[in-house]
Image 1 (cartoon, helix red, strand yellow):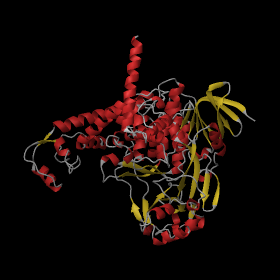
Image 2 (cartoon, rainbow, N blue to C red):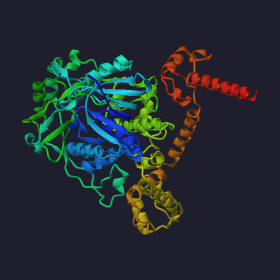
Image 3 (spheres, rainbow, N blue to C red):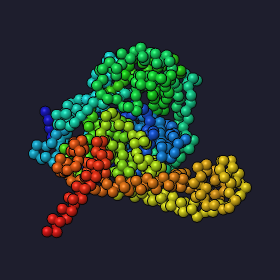
Image 4 (cartoon, one colour):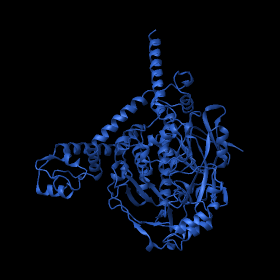
Length: 637
């Protein structure tokens, strides 16, 4: 039996990384918000790898922080080890990754939610969502216990719980991650509502006991000596810098591992046909690696701690859905794991998610006003991708409640914008993972300048407070002054300087040169020029890094900025809401079909739809020009 419970402005279903950012954003923007979770102890859980960040993912965390989100701060508060990836490559792909104490992270996040004004955190399984019969502008969410909550907006952030099913060898059962219940009733409700769902799959490795590992056979992987935080708040904290607390280790599979997997491949639900869901292309299981990369003799595994107060260790790179006995056998062929004890068996999980082509760039459903999707529900994978979508969904739900214009992040201005644009414009055939290669503007969308790109937006919306914004403006002024100093400061020739130049295999000088000209040389940087750069002020490392990057890559940056301006020209050409593409002469049939299905908001988005050619875009531009001229003439009559 149902009963009427409280009324809220925003309801968030799910308290994973998408739900967390959505709920906090909506509440911090002044909306009375409720967040539902199947189990209160699973709030902010890291059910897969105990880490935050990684290639391109570190960019997303920085951008969430710049908008006023929570993930970066929580990661800095609970990290175990920090490393900047891709240091040997260009600055566009430098990405921060940190090992996280997963229980402390969860507790830190849960307490943040509990103490957030205007946010109520409730343990309840939502089994149904529906429109209110006597007020179509309101949604209702219904719990398994019969409580009915009225709300203006609903954000679906169900992660892998939605109709979740666990697979380990021949065994399968309904369930969510880490032994939690699945949200099966809600999955059925969404399908009955008409939400276009599909079936995806992901997996996780076993957790093993630290004391059963022979560390003498493993390669040690240290953290960075100089730690860079995720959050700009941490950067401004007097207690900074941070310190690494643990090391990670590396080992490898071998021919024996491969043989065991191949002999038991028929027992894997991935290959026996039991799993229908599509798995992540860029994070395959160990059995999938053996099959897809059969020419490789070995595969690298990372052994990572799950926390300071637990003996559980995570086997990064060894996810599997093979039977438990096969898992034990294959893990024990790996150097250092000959006597390993498994504490949590690896498993695959199949779950429902939406076809993201049903969403607007605001993450609101096109056919269901006030209903939003975020995170793995939208067909993505990863904590960071989830948090990025969560904060956008939360912001837009709040803006809708308040009758304000929605926030749409341009793909040219952020990885978050790229992620969302890819989802809602191109759709997904498998769980979407953010990579630097997905952005055509990655030299501009670096993680070091996320504050410049997004903090003004976060401040204007109201998620970035004045103190944090003043600190940002101060950093911006320091950077501006240093850029000017680099251009104005002459460095005279000297024995010290020429020794530096020769040692770095670059040409000595006989006449004074400006500092900026020296920094443009690939062989030189601020650090090596310290002995001769005598007027340099005491600046934070992040400022010097930004200045150096912009000096070295000035030409490439200008070229990308020109590309952005051209793209922006198309983005500004809005397409009418109810446009009938069948009536536009000159459009190809495939273009008509794709444009009608996706209903892009502007010509720029239309140009990125697969199946819409440059010729089709030209037809659209001509049609728009005629429409505008016709409207102008009608206005003059």
